[in-house]
Figure 1 (cartoon, rainbow, N blue to C red):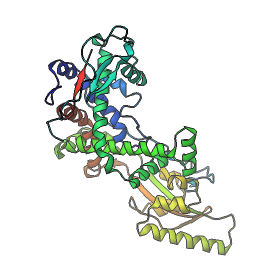
Figure 2 (cartoon, rainbow, N blue to C red):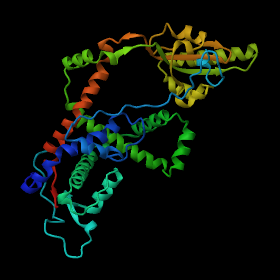
Figure 3 (cartoon, rainbow, N blue to C red):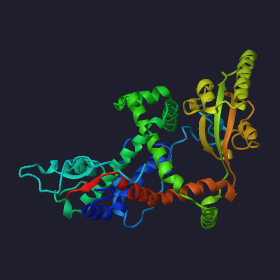
Figure 4 (cartoon, rainbow, N blue to C red):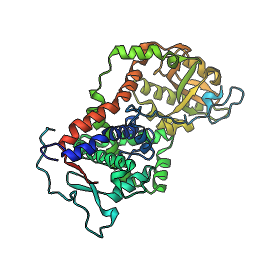
Length: 407
């Protein structure tokens, strides 16, 4: 590359795989964009994302995967009311001077092991055949040949690895934009999505061979990646209201609720069987105190983790979704009048005193457009991220770095 541009030969080689690189990277970065609910992404390309390389010619649209996790609470019927779940019991265009080349297009010296041969470089840092083959194998598409010039799979892997290294360089610009509070919040969300207490989470982390400090480093990198993609890709995509309305009108079945459901969280102050008047009074005072703190803006999940006697406390009191018929009569009567986000007054049942938060309430019928504008906009942004990422990598990043292929 010279003067910020690829050499003609390198440009021709790189251009052929630009769409492949962009699409593969969007697929992998979708994991980060999904909110990191399924764990740290660690690498820009996750195992499994390599499969999307082969689909690049057909589409550059990749939607970030949705998060799916168990609710962490049982869903017993109204007839069976077990104790564990009382609620349900009822930069510029001019790059710096190029570094000294570390490889050239000259044939390798006789006797040079094929796996040590340099097949590409980014800013003077070589990429060897071994790196490419390891990269491809890690993503489920092993390369069986040393003749990269005649192997489409090898070319795609080289280009994807170049794209990854370019993004690794870019993400370093965000090193000073992430603080400890963001990292801890990220890890806390990760633990909650796994429905684990802090002790359980740390035990599993230790069993996996990863220290907490290592997890923090990976969390920082994930947050930096998300910031980079949000600023350089997603923020530059404009979705007009007309597109949102058109999507809504053609997908109304996706926004039609057929069954009523309640999403609940609770804090339980447990009482023993046949409690004394003093026990009931003390439990009521404690429940009133907790309810008052929640009403003043205290985080319900944090309060549940500190005060709740229910097993759901490790998940911030989250119980999940239930049909009205699966909820105890006392609880249902208290939460039905609430609006999503509101918290009930303390409710006495045979298990103790409950403080219940109505998180969401799905009522049968077509959901109004205004209620789903945000998720539709996010989905349409996801669908356009492939083209925007390709544009950013091909039009901006490549001009700011020195890239060469040598096969």
